[in-house]
Image (cartoon, rainbow, N blue to C red; front, side, top):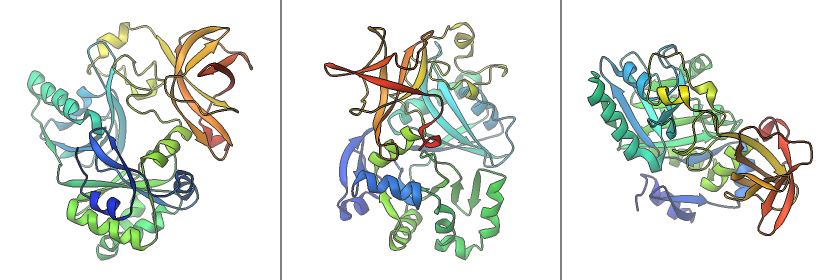
Length: 357
């Protein structure tokens, strides 16, 4: 079982630890509800160092990134973050990722923990097959911390490395860009919670100092349990749930992150011909908590399954996402979720749950 560079801090804090993507990760430090509320109303911090962090450099690094993922990084200005997907030859999703166009010299990428080795293998194959003049350099000695919540900006400015570098003016430039480099530390205005926030990439020794400073400031430590609730409330997909090799980006309602006008990218030919099989839906239930795998029923017929579910404290009900057969149409009270041996009425939502919370 792998451990992040901050693992001992979690043990000292008596966090509940569980395996996730091959890593021993903190699930919660206190009640998950309290950690969620800290992020929604104040600020919280997450150790996300299990994610795959790598730099792509070389004269053709942008051509490589343009090819192996679905979105258009060429059209993005420097300093922007680009969300995209890596597809297999049949158009299924291998992984989703964020590519940070740090400068004209290199691109920082962040991929999912459980898919890191396979993603890197796919990228290396692209380099070899297309003879790109580019290199993939994993940043194993880097750690990653997500600082999320409405007070994340003030908290970030209070860190010593910002004070020492007089970087307040630099951070203000992030209103026009998504990623900033301060020496060997990268700060990105991104996250996985639906809140204002930042993700910090730093060498492990510096990140241990950053974590310690944040802890002394009283920032709430948050685990993967809260992170899952927060991302479901924001209707963000998670690989292995809303995304798999059997599901295309269009099935998962992520078509806006696929630029079919690009000359070529992994899986493009298949996506041009592949019909829609599913559509992603958002729903709430007044009884019970929906869980992955629960059947979705329409007019006494199973038409799909729940991909993610949790309890939303603000709405005081269960919420979830699911994949149903393309072509399904729902009347106001026609959708049901099968919870064990019971069928529970579900309400369809057109937008993420934060907009109504």
